[in-house]
Length: 156
Length: 430
Image (cartoon, rainbow over all chains, first blue to last red):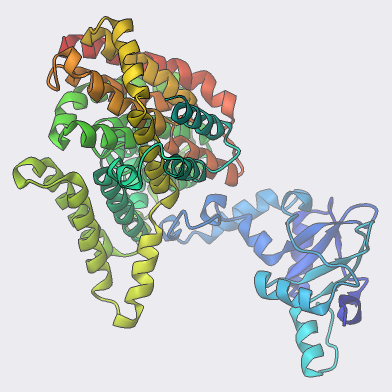
């Protein structure tokens, strides 16, 4: 069984020059974990997900390693978070895209995709060999549904 | 004499290329030295300074447990608020906190705790973080120079020359205060006075809730008690007839015990394992390998030969020797790791001591070596472990420091520090 058998073909994607605000709206409206980000030729650039959206508003030093035990000392100023988001809303999503995200090919065995799900807890884009064009997305739900024999659900 | 010297030089060269982990290089070289019969295994083990290793290991465990408490974040925020969130004031305050903490805890650990909060404070103020990072690097190396436990070269020198915690504080404390004051003034003139933050931005820093930076108040109390006890015990090491390594390991053991005490018995092993994992084993094995390597070249007579050359070059004059080591040590420390060359110089200096009037007469040489090797670390971005730690955090946070950008300002400032130390050494010891 390969990834091609369980992937959702032609998934929803955003272009790298779309705004962060538009990409965020897409994620929120459809409760996506991640959205693939592609260039003008449809090649995968990376993923932009809900964690990438939230990480834009948290000091970067607080999300790398265990350098800060907590951020409670910043207090509870939600208007400040909204103000920060407003300053980022019109920036291109390429600024926040996760370029290190794992990717698989249509012929990648399912077990390898499952290993990546277990390690990264993220949906995975499926790209074409050689061109890196986005051809599908697979989620841990797709893998789980296949294994327990449940019918295929809505796209990730 | 030739083969051990060649092995030493080659190992040193490989370390300098930074293409292979330094601990791996020296452990392998030490193993080759024993295997080739440059020194017997018993001699190799005898050449390791376990007092130094115990002191380092103990303080690393203490820092590893203390950092979970969040106390360092609290200190940094309080310092910023005491300056009413003025960026120029914060530059001074965070430098002072870094210098004082660095005097009693390893420099690299100190910056690891202060720098992340610095990033948050600078972001809230809307000012560039670089001046703060620069100032904290300098402060950590300056503060670490003041005490026996502040910087690895001091630990090595103190252990080898039987110098106490108080000896270091009394001999180096005054010049460290002067160097810190001058440095702070210069950094204010270079960056501090031009840092500006709006009223709203400053209000955000003033609104930070410093006590909330503390994750575990009980751990803060336990850690500070143990660190306080450690400092007092180190100050009284001589009347207590205890070596600093023993004191450090006892303190680490007490803090681990206090950390485990409230936990269920089944989690003790996991918690203790985590505490032991806080030890920087790369550094510890680097020290072990170097001690053995230096033991090998000492036995081969290389250090005797170099000692005779040094005596001939300086005419056996203590002042000339001290000042040569002050400047030479500083410049070399800026360019390469100061630990290997201090470990190499220690037996060399001990070897020439009789020709220079004995242990008491060469005390200024030890102080000059300590000042040069510790403060020299300020001369470049690779000059000390603290510098590299800050550079690493900055890079991962998306604001890389830049090797040459740092060095352009750092090297002249380091030379100025050494010039101040030169005047102090001459005035105080000759």
